[in-house]
Length: 241
Image (cartoon, rainbow, N blue to C red; front, side, top):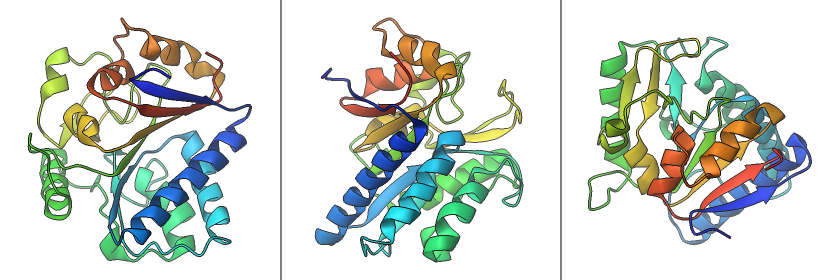
């Protein structure tokens, strides 16, 4: 295993989703035993739908309390929460409603608001709930990331200058993302770097080139940049590498 990442391969997206769901349930169960909160940031993407559905299904037999979980997001499209493009809507339909998660535990990014104001509000909210490290970054227990075909994670784009890697904003507004919709909110590299755990769910053969570049010592795409900041990021994938 590389110091930078642990790569776990699966034959199918369903197997990947089921394993990620089981492992996340284990993390929440451990937090409950330690009488601790569990602060997590979710992402969107096709594999997320299978993952959340599997999580809910597996939770039925495990009797785990979700009362101490705080749900945040890695990114959001600048659309209303009822829009089909909304990452919140996916989580709400597949996770929060089935598990009856109460509103005070859900800290969504307000895609319907003016983006810069929404980013500031989200940063203030996460800082009010999550402790910070020595660099002033909130330390989430777990961040889920998906992988774009161009190697983007959250809404961190490949064409951003490397100086943005060191931007200390927890959330920031993006106004020219290459993939529609162009207006988005994203978590920053430094907040991803500060998280206790980061799990990448990379699914689909179209992601093969992006994942290979990410794992290359000379990779330039956003996930490669994330890996340089962290040790032991977990990658769950059905992509042949």
